[in-house]
Length: 231
Image (cartoon, rainbow, N blue to C red; front, side):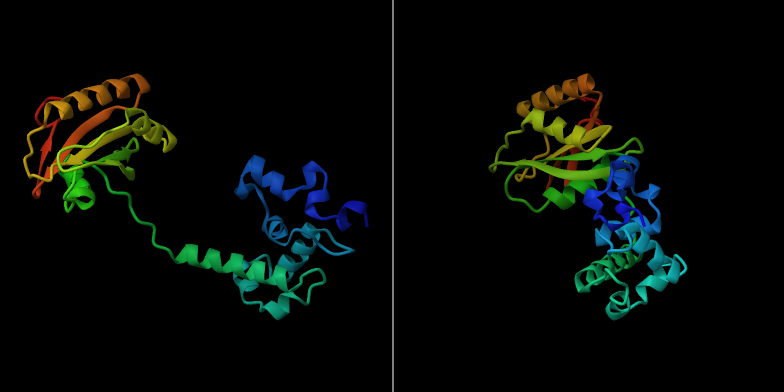
């Protein structure tokens, strides 16, 4: 048995470390045994973490469903697997089960001003003070995230343009839609609304993150800058 088999993962040569392999090549590049080896961290005096993990996975036909049926006591029968490591393996398998059971929610798609209004209405419709939000969209106009940028008073709010586009770039958005509410129910944009929209639209052109629309929400209705031709 060579020396490496008795070392913990931290002591292995770079090419032998499953953690580094995951870092540089991604988790899909690792075998099932290598993933288990990352969980347990070290093997025993005779086996490396990967060798021990290979033996465990071989005993369950390399099948995670069969591995999940092993009790903590069953796992601890393997030399080098104590209670803490057995619990770690069990917890990881349970996370995998819960992930598989989670229904993937389809991202809402903005097809027109009304679909944008519906999303902003959920966020802003019940507020009695003015608030400013953005919808971050991907290339299919599906919403990556809705972010509230700032809250203000009854008649206005301050918007940091740099923060708007930093958030867009951080989330890899390819376009954005602006939205804010008028608690008064008056939908007509103010001069400040128009000026802000113009500045954000110009910045979006420079950064290649176009501003598609600006929606004003008020009293269950909305105003669309794009629909009104003033974008």
